[in-house]
Amino acid sequence: MVLVAILLTWIVLGAAFYWLSSAREVITGLSATQVPNLAQTTRLSAKTADLAMLSNRILSDNAEASEALETMLKASVAELGEFVSEGFDSAITRQDAEALQHQLALVIRSVDQVEQLDMRLLEMIDQLRWLNADVQDETAAVMADFAFNIEVLTRQMIDETRPEIRRDMASTLAEELRLQTTFSNIGNDTATATTLAIQISNSQSIAQLQQFENLVADALARVNASIEELPAKAEYLFLRQASETLARMTTHPSGVVQDRKSWHEARKNLGTQIETVLTLLTRMQGQLLTQAEAQRTEILSISDGFSRSAAVTMRLLLGMTILAATGGLAILFSYIRPSIIRPMESLTSAMRQIAEGGRPKLDGLPVRNDEIAQLASAVTAFKNSVIERDQAIRDLRQTQNELVQVGKMAALGNLSAGIGHELNQPLGAIRHRLRLLQTASAKGDSGRQTMQIGKIDDLVTRMERIISHLRKFARRSEYLREAVPLVRTLQSAQELLHAQIADHQITVVIDPELEDAVVVGDAILIEQVLVNLLSNSCDAIAATEMAGTITIRKEQGKKGMLAFSVVDTGIGLGDLAPERAFDPFVTTKDPGRGLGLGLSISFNIITGMNGTLSLGARADVGTRATLTLPHEGAMHET
Image (tube, rainbow, N blue to C red; front, side, top):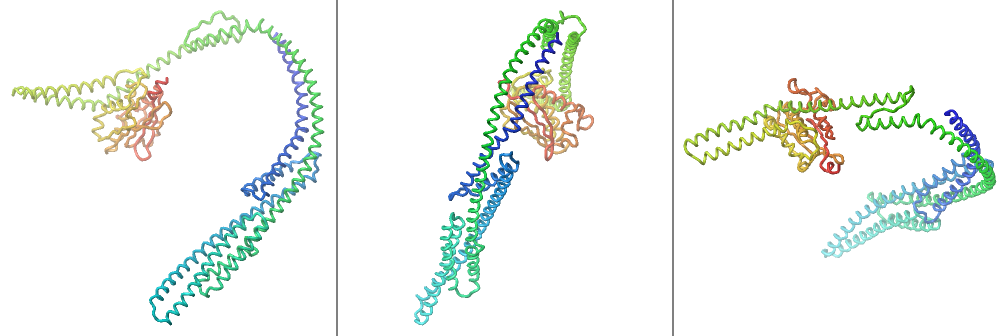
């Protein structure tokens, strides 16, 4: 029955493949011949329109951003050249294509020539501006000297009484006034010539250029006439050289006027060449349109035949598909459903129950030696392995809790000397207060007796608080999920290490931004981690034999997480890699000072509370331990 279903399916597929192969040949023929030829016409029309639009914008009298437009024109010409170099069918002759490529090369050459002339004009205008600035500075300085001399001579003439001396002074004063006027004319005419040269560099027509050229020539003639009136002195040599340079950069054959004329001529040639390109493109487009019309008629004929053939084939395939589907349904309901589907549903249900923690019974399956029986055996084995895995996880969790408790006891053992010191101090004070109480009692001083009893009560309360804190710290924890004020937990851990911190002159600084921080986790376990990290920092600072600082600062954390670091100024990690510090029994302390389990236990505790713990060396000195824990807002969202 299965073979019959397969045979029917292959018959349908064979007929479908045969029809698809015929359709592919038709479509391949269309895509390989007719469609590319039609696409040629469309591409050529689009490129012709782009080239014509850019050409009109460039050649217009008020073209804006001509440099950018010329760059766009060059790109369009290059694309059109690539299109032409790809070759054409018989509709366009190779001679027309080569003529178009030659004309496109001329267009690009003309565009480059215009760009070069624009750059040269810009450079010369900059030089003219600097030359004008130098001339203005020179004439301004000389005119200031003349003004000073005129003012001095005028005052002297007012005070002089002798007629012959006054006549000499008047003659000198007239000469000074004449020279001052001459220098003023030189400065004004130089500025005028420079301004006209700038206008020439931006002229949009030959007539406008010639008008500005005549005005520049007049300004240069006035500058030269004014310079001829100057005395032959060395200090006026710069002005004579500036006049020659100004003439060379404006009216001479290598000046702005001639370059702008060349620019207009190049633009004219560019327009002529573009018109030639557009004429060639129009002729090619007409040839392609003629060919496209013939191809369109052929495509319509092929499409009609393909449609009729497809309709017949689709009806045949539909009948064969219905026949194959009927046979397949018969096989499905008579054999596959009772023999395969129902046993697979039972096995799937059993797998789902195993995944949800249930213990299903695999009864009612057919007894036979096939793949279903093997799968049933595998599901049974999987159920047994899941039971064993759950028991192993419970044992592992119990071992982890025991290891955390061992870590607490180890931390209390390391802190025993400091804790004993914390208890011995109030005990000694109580003994002293009892003696004072006896003395006050002997003297009958009730006021002192009351005072000493109050002091003793305070000391007893302090000892009770220390012992209560130790009991709470030593209590087993089950990874509770509660809101824990971070600063209060830090202060509790700091109290346990009070003696160690005081003995080594360590300063603990808590970031004010952590004042109101509340994290989510188990308060006892978080305190255990903080005690371990602060204790490691104290040992690292003690190894330096100098006073140090432990800073608890807030860091930038991810959304929903609070990050903070414990940073110390101790001896650091040395050659130990930060990631290796979390391995069990790895430590940088001297033998007998630690087992190397503290950081490993702390890492597992923080990971169990959905947080992270990382370690790194500081850039200068010491170590930085960074913790991230869910903050109170994340608990509310959950």
